[in-house]
Amino acid sequence: MDVSVVQPSPVPVKLDEGSPVKKIGLVALSTDLTLERDFHRICSPDRVGIYTGRVLFENPTTPENLRKMLPRIEAAVELILSGSELDAVCYGCTAATVHIGDQEIQAAVQSAKPGVPVVTPSGAGALGLKAVGAKRISVLTPYTVEVSRPFADYFTSRGFEVVNLECLGLLDDRDIARVSRETILEAGRAAMSPDSDALFLSCTALRAVEYMEEVEAAIGKPAVSSNQASVWLTLRRAGVDDEIQGFGRLLTLGIPD
Image (cartoon, rainbow, N blue to C red; front, side, top):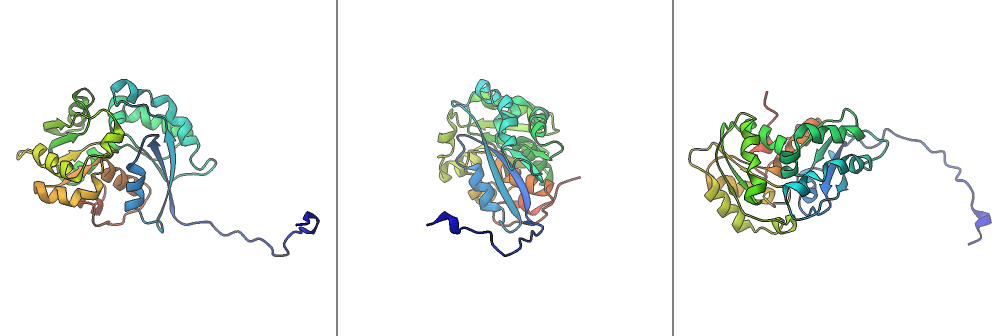
């Protein structure tokens, strides 16, 4: 082509208001195979845009490696729609939030996006458990005992009685993403104490969202998972109040007072 024939178009450019969808930032781990898919699985693209940044995470899943992510979060958030405002940001690691702290995660995110509502899976899980009316809970994690132990204190500090806590002993979040439906259902049923009001299934790598209705049917009580709660609270913080069916009771509820 003769580039000398390239000319400006005679058509005047008119700009509209842009897409009306809510803009949600998602900070996923560099190893994540599950959380990003679950957000897209649940959220309507006509209502919500999911914009993902990745933060470096190094297996195995240990308290030390989880805490290493904190100084990396701000840079990951800065790369999500640079120069644009977001309606909410979700940081995608339950265990890291428990080991680092909700306030520290929020501060890191808001260093890049001042004032944005910040959601963590553990914080969303606690609020989701309150939304389904739970006071006494059972907890199932896929982690080791060392990584799981602080979860009892985390939920106790938020007003719950942790009746029991069971863990699957996995060290690699890529293996966690391969935990089978059968294991999730059987381990969930085994972990659910008859004295508990609800079951919390931890970890954004765990593919529990796909089976939440089956889990609730198996235990006969409400169940809340990290990803289910993260999507629920991120949507609510972004101003989306839709009742979403097919992923457990929580996604049909509003934020409790």
